[in-house]
Structures are given as C-alpha cells and as structure tokens.
Image (tube, rainbow, N blue to C red; front, side, top):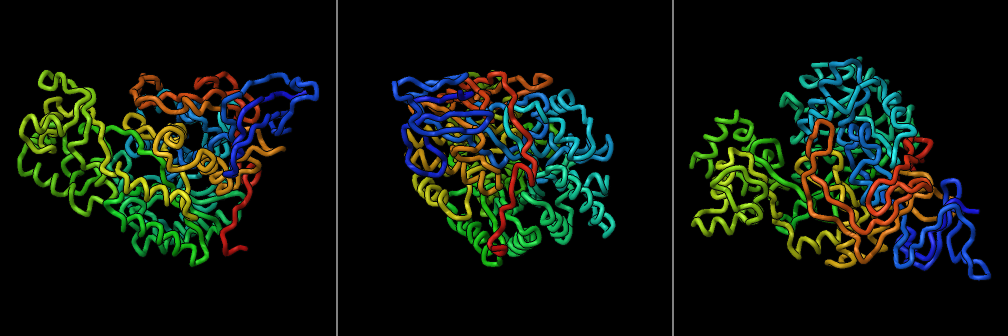
Length: 583
C-alpha cells in the first residue's frame, strides 16, 4: 500500500521532456512509482491518501536559489508566500547577510540593524520574532530541525563572520593575517555543521544600520579568496556573491575576483541579478561575457535572472531603489525637513532628473519612466482621488513635466505616497532578449529576494507568474521548459541529492497545479508580521497541492499544517558540483 497516490495528472518530470499522463505513488517520503498504476480490474491501488489530479499538471517542487528567509522562518516555518507558490526547497543566507554565526549580543544587534537597512526587514518583526539564542552556525541550523514546511539550505555570510571576528573594526579596515585565520576557522566550522557555502557582497547598494558599507565590502580581495579556499575542503558546497558589476556591468577587477573565487573554492559561483533591458544591450552582453571569461579561466559563474518583472513600490520617506540613482542618496538621506526643502527646490529637481537619466544610473535607469508610475495610497487632501492613476496622465492635466508632478504628489503627502513604478524595460525587444538569455549556459532562473524588502518588493510569486505567462500570456517558454528551469536546473547547480525531478526513488517534493488558473494575485500590503509589521504579498492561484518529502504542506494555496521540511546540509543532502577544471 502506498502512502500517497496522485492519480490521473499530466506528469512533467522536470527534465524538460514533454508531459505524459501518469500516476505518481509515494512511500516513506519518496517517489515509489510513476506510470499507469491502474489495476487490471480498473481500480486504483491502495493508498492512505489519494488525490485526483485529472486535468492538472504534476511536477517537481520549485527550487528558489536566492532568498533571505533566515529570520522569517523562526515565526513562519512555511516561508510564506514562497511555499504557497510551489517552492519546496530554497537557499537562504545570500549576499553575505546571515544571522549566524555571532559572538555576543552586540553582534546580534548589529546584524539586526543591518538587515533592517539593507534587506528592508521590519525592526519590530526582528525584535519580536528572534531570540538570538544561538552562537554557532550549527546551532542556528539546529533551531529549524522538525519545524519547517519547506526544505532549506543556508549559505554562511561573510558580513556575519567578519563582524564576529573584528567587531566594530569590521566596517573600517582590512583584516590582519590572524583575523583572516580566525574567519577561516569560523567558516570551516559553519560549513562542517552543514552550511551550503560562502556568500559575500561588494555592492555599493549595501550599507549597514549606521550607513557604513557592510563588513564584507571592507574586505580585501585576498581575504575573499582565502575564505573561498576554505569552501574547497567541504563537499557539497558552493559560492554566491553580489558586486557593483551585477548591476552596472563588471569591471576587469571584478571579473578577476570572481574567477579567483571560483578557482580557489573549485566550485561554481552564482550572482544576482542579471537585469535585461533592450535600451542597454551592452550591459547585458558585458555581464554574460564576464561569465564566459571565468569559464575560459577554468572556473564557473552563473547569473541569476528573473523571468517576470518583479512587483515593487517606491517611497520617498524610506530607503528604496531610488536612493541608488546617481547623486540621489545625498538628497534622500537628508533629515526629513531638509529633504522636503530640497525636493521643492527647482535646481535640485533639475539635478536629480538629469542624473537619473545619465548613463551612471546603470540598471536603476529602468525606474526612471516617471510617467509610468502608478499612484498608490495617498495621505492628503490635495491628492484625494489620485490613487490608481498614472503620473503621466496627471502631469498632462497639470501641464507639467512627469518628474515634477511626481515630486509634487509626494510632497503633498509629506513624502508618504506609495508609488508603483512601471518599468521602462517592459517592451517586446527586452522580452525577446530575456527569452534568449533563459537558455544560456551561464544563466539560471532566480533572484526573488523572498523574505527581504518586505514592504516594497514581492518576488516570491515568480513561479506562478511565469507559468501563467507561459500558458496564457506571452508564451516565451514552454511549460515543460519553465518547470525545468525552476526545478532541475537549480537542483543540479547546488547538487541537491535526489531532488528537482520526478524520478522513482527520489524525494517526493511535488506540486499539483491547474494550468487553467495558475497565477498570482494583485500585490497587497498585509500587516501580518510580528509587531503588526507590513509586507507586500501576492496570493497564489491554481496551486492545488504541494507536497514536501511526501507530506502535504499546501492545499489550494494555503498552509495545510504539516511540517515535513528538512535542513539541507552540505555533504549530506548536497553533493559537490565540480567546475570544468576538475573534470
């Protein structure tokens, strides 16, 4: 007798092969049979649970390679909304931002403030949701055992390691040889305890709670390389980083460091995120050329890219992507009253608009289609009735430039206006470029940032959004191809043992969805985090069942109560993925 029988669906196994009508049986958390399992008399075999999947697609659970659920999992073991959109395995701890290891409470306080600033996490949620009752990375991972609705692998973050060893000096100077040795030992202990690998950031967008560069940005290249070399000694590990070039095009020194990282670890490195815009084709080619150069040197670099345009909002009163436009931070970081005065000044307005339109804006230029901004919540009488309208339409009525109208709306609300940008890269030429990139050898689907930027970005729904687009939208990928990109490809990149495909004997991470209705709802702001803190959220449609290790975790898009997820520990739940130079 089987534990579970999913009967009558179209099985898409994750390899990219065409779907077939088949049944899927599960025993002891693993797939025990796939095919026509109907008995000779036409009856179904005995099973403790039978799910009729007629008219549905049955596929492997989706794998998200880039999340920041390190904190949220403590109060939300389902990692919502990711699990509701079919994610069954995820990698957290990216960009060097982890909450372990820590040496003392001052480290905990520092890392919490850093996450508030750099990842947009709620200070109230972190204060109420975390007890910081761990010190080592192993103790941190142990806290999740038996209390997960998803499978989770955790990268070990450079900033946490550096802070633990160097304390306040971590943001102000390079490390001594003795300090590097201490960091190497701390990383080795963390990897031996099951850490998936080493992550770091050298991106200009990443500052800590005091506005200083996060610790990893102060590290010398030799320190980064030395820590990557530690990874080589631990099976089933990998690398992840983010740098200026991930957004603005790689410099030679960044390509050199990415190569050194991969060769030192003898592992692939993935970076986030490849943004494709037909208005800037040279940037896209530069970034893929960087991956080619790493490969030519014997390493491997994989770019993450999203198959959808991620829903996000902008605020002028709190940190958001607009702060990263050239010269904008000087104004946006002013005290409130001084910021209001600056944004009212015609000279400052002209300067901000000019600098935003300059080549220096890089990837953030996609946010400068001011007329496409849709007005969200407003908070003043002058803005009454503007919610839902486009800035461009309002500007034409007022006889103003789009940018000046946007600032007038924001100032009327004392900077509190919620704005929804309409990206400039939502055009046919950009989508054709993306379609080509998805099948590039050095590109992988991912980059949701789920668990971070909670009040201004919502990337967790990319799985259902893309499936809907494949079936009922642009149709730039087949359903089988999209599923392979979100299951087998990331599973093989990280070396997840017997996950990512529907194959007999493999772990039963399974999604059953309705192709007629699969998709994501509108982005809403919900106040359901600890401390009544807000987050952007999109409901999942058409996700009928999600099974993790053979146990149902999601029914009709909602958590079902089971917590069968496991911590995916390196060397046990993952195997080493060797770069070409090792073959």
